[in-house]
Amino acid sequence: MLACQGLDSTTRRTVIQFSLPAQTISAQRAVFLLELDAHEHKRLHSRISCLVQNPSAPGPTFESAFDEVHTAYQNYRKDITLVHTSNSHFDDWMNQSRADLHLLLTATPAGP
Image (tube, rainbow, N blue to C red; front, side, top):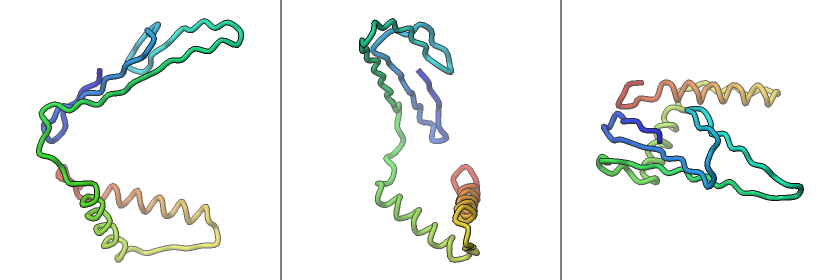
């Protein structure tokens, strides 16, 4: 089980379960030792559950959050310089860099 407490004071837990017992489990991996005969099949199922304890007030709906982010991004794009070249790889790199900078500069309750 992994757990953390968010800035909203809500405790979130992630539980990982497997259908077969692991040989060893560490913080980085679960190791399974499976012996198979020729052409034999075995299935290993995993389940990841996310649990929220003491949830804060419900957040916005997906649609309202999307509209807010979309409007903010459109306003951001009004003031930026766009670069287009004959090299699509360079254009992709520039677009990704611009998106990364926008992400780093986005205002959040924890700061920019």
